[in-house]
Image (cartoon, rainbow, N blue to C red):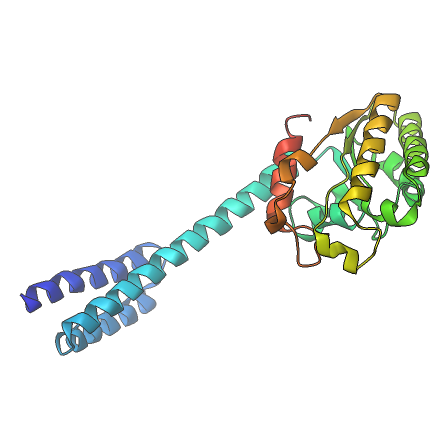
Amino acid sequence: MKRTILLVMSGILIFSIIKGAINGIDNKSFNENNFIGKEILVQLEQRNLSDVENEIDTYKNKYFQDKDAQEDRFNQTQGEENNSKYFQNTIFMGDSITEGLSELGVIEEYNVLVNKGDTVIKAINSIDTLTNLNPKNVVLLYGMNDVIEFDNSMKFKEKYIELVNEIKKVLPNTKIYLISPLSVMDKAVNINERLTNSNLDEFREKAQEVVTETGINYVDIETKINKKDYLHEKDGIHFKYEFYLIWLDYLKEYI
C-alpha cells in the first residue's frame, strides 16, 4: 500500500517537472531538474509516508501560490495597459493622491499633472502646461491640502471656481470632471489637526456647489470607498494600488 501511494506521489512530482519544461525551461535546466527529481524519488522511498505526504502537500501549495501570483501580475499589467490606453487623452490634476496614479504605474506619467502639496490656488500655475497638452478630458481632485490651507470652505469654493473657469477659458472644448474630496482615517489628525472627516465633508459639499455653479461633471468616488480603511496607506491619508483601480473603473462610467 505504501509503495502504491509513493508511486502516485512520484507521478505528481514527475508531472510537475515535465510541466516546468513545457512552460519554458531550457534543455539543460530540464535535464538537471529531471536528474534531481529521480534522486528525490529514491529518497522518498526511504522516508516515513506521513513525512512524504506533508512535503508533497507543501510543494503543491507553493506551486499553486506561485501560479496565482504570476496570474495576478499578468492581470495587473494588462489592467495598467488598458487604463493607459483608455485615458490617453485625459489629464489628471491634483495633489499627491492624484500623483499616486503615475507613481504606482496605474497610468502613464504624462497623463498626470501634479505637484505634492498642490491646492486649487497653486494649480493655476499649471494652466499653461495644461493648455499645451490640450487634452480631451481633465480630471480634478483637490481638497486634502486645501483643508489645511483654508480656514473656511467658502474660500476653497471661490478658488476652485476660479480654477475651473480658467480651464474652461483656455480649453473650451475640454470636458472637466471634478472628483469628490476623499475621506481619511481617524489617525490622519496626527499629521495635521485639520485633517478630519467633518472638515472634509464640509469641503465636499462646497465641491458639489462648484460643479452646480460651473456646469462641469461631478464624480462622487467617495461613495465607493467610504469606510474602506484597507484601501488606505498607513498614514491614513494616501491610498494603495487597489484604490486607483476602483477610481478608474468608476470614472469609466463617465468618460
